[in-house]
Length: 59
Image: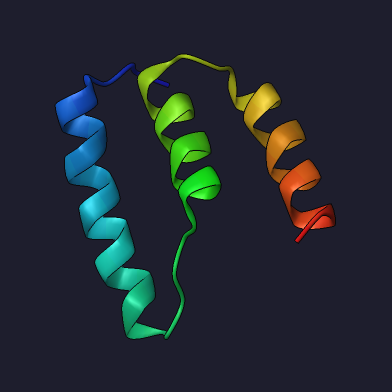
């Protein structure tokens, strides 16, 4: 997976949030932060999956 800048991650997130809003869904701050960390390479995909599962269990 290629790493992205913060600006690129923001642009991708805006597009993704618009797409999920059509379905009536939203992301909270912790979910959005987690995705951005993965997009920018701050965490690995494996770590992303682990943390996403943790978030879903505590929702």
